[in-house]
Every structure is written in structure tokens, then in C-alpha cells.
Length: 212
Ligand SMILES: CC(C)(COP(=O)(O)OP(=O)(O)OC[C@H]1O[C@@H](n2cnc3c(N)ncnc32)[C@H](O)[C@@H]1OP(=O)(O)O)[C@@H](O)C(=O)NCCC(=O)NCCS
Image 1 (cartoon, rainbow, N blue to C red):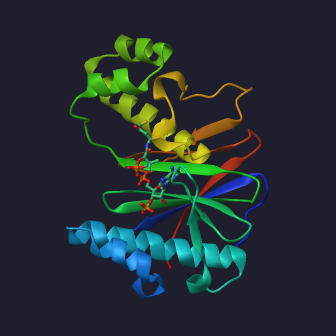
Image 2 (cartoon, rainbow, N blue to C red; image 1 turned 180 degrees about the vertical axis):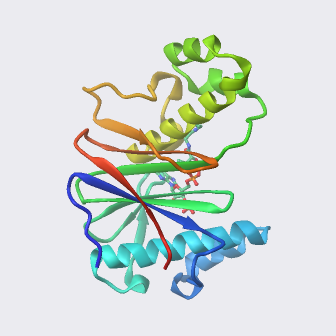
């Protein structure tokens, strides 16, 4: 059994290469989605992520993993039929699953560190005026890391609120102020830009490795 304290957010890292065989836990809809991936490597990560999600949430909710039912909020955020909140992100060979108590919405994002192709264009599309000024003050070698850092934090924030693409990113600060309903922290994941966001400011993130 797993318990998440009211002032904690757990973030589980799932590596496709070491995840146990969890495909049997998926329901028909999840298996259909898995089968639509063209590349084996993306399919494997999707299966590992969704199987791990069922195993973990089952432990928090003390229910068999196969019995969990997922629904989707109007803007696309998945929810589970039990008193726990979660969010999922996957990139390359890694998935992250954030779990919090029933009153704390969460969002998580992991992105493989790769140099974005149109770095300046992305900066203009996602940054506030202050963030853009900071970006432009940086040297060439620091700009890529800054874009990825801002990107991961904003993705985590929009996923916590569940608004997804409806959020105007140039109006959303990647460092929410004390009066914001949200806060966000960076996650130390080598090779990835990663962040978790959640409702309120009275929580800390605990990073954990999922082994099965
Ligand atoms: C879905 C979205 C929220 C995240 O997608 P992504 O970064 O491509 O992918 P991630 O791996 O981080 O997250 C995907 C998972 O988030 C979850 N998800 C889907 N819609 C969501 C939503 N509206 N809110 C929160 N979580 C969502 C799902 O579990 C999904 O996994 P699944 O497809 O395996 O079920 C994205 O499409 C989006 O709207 N992004 C924000 C807008 C933007 O332009 N961002 C640019 C960078 S700041």
C-alpha cells in the first residue's frame, strides 16, 4: 500500500528498459492506443507508463490495477475513479507519474534534453516579456537549456490546471508568484528537463524510481 501525505507530491520515474511486463494490466482502449504507435520503442514506453500508472494508483487506492477506470476532463486531462490525483508525461525512454492527494491537482512534464530546432521562435511563442528579456540576455550556449527549463515548467503548470493548449503561454509565468493558485518545482532527472506543478504552495516533491 502507498500513501501520499497531504503536503507531498510523489513523482515516479518509469524507464521503459527496466519496467516489468505490465501489458496484461491494460484495458482494451489502452491496448488499442498502444497498437497505433508506429515505432516499437514508443509503444513500449506507452505500455510501461500506463501499466505502471495502473499498478501505482492501485497501490494508493488499495484496488486491483485492472479495476481502475479512467475518465477525461473536458480539456483532455485524465482522471481516475478514486480519491487521488495524478498526471503522466513521457519522453524518449522515460515516463514520469505524479501522484497527489484528492484535493491537490498535479501536472508533470519530462522532456529529453535536445536542442530545439527553432529556439528563438519557441522562446517568442512561450515566454512572457520578462522571460524573453532574460533569454535574450543569455549567451548562445545557455539559451537552449533556458528554453527547455521554461518549457518543462509551463507544461507542468498547464497540465496541472488541465487547460492544455487553451492556456496562453506568453501570459503564464514559469515562476508563479505567491498569490498564484499554483506552484512548480524542477526535478533533477539527468538528461531531461523536468518539472512538477501542483495546486497551492504547501507541498514538496518526492522523486521515486519505479521498479515494479
Ligand atoms: C497534452 C499536453 C497537455 C501535454 O502533451 P505533451 O507534452 O506532448 O506530452 P506529455 O507526455 O508530457 O503528456 C501526455 C500525457 O498528459 C496527459 N494529458 C493529456 N491531456 C492533458 C491535459 N489537458 N491536461 C493534463 N494532462 C493531460 C495524458 O496522460 C497524456 O498521456 P497519454 O497520451 O499517454 O494518456 C499538450 O498537448 C498541451 O496541451 N501542451 C500545452 C501547450 C503548449 O503549446 N506547450 C508548449 C510548451 S510550454
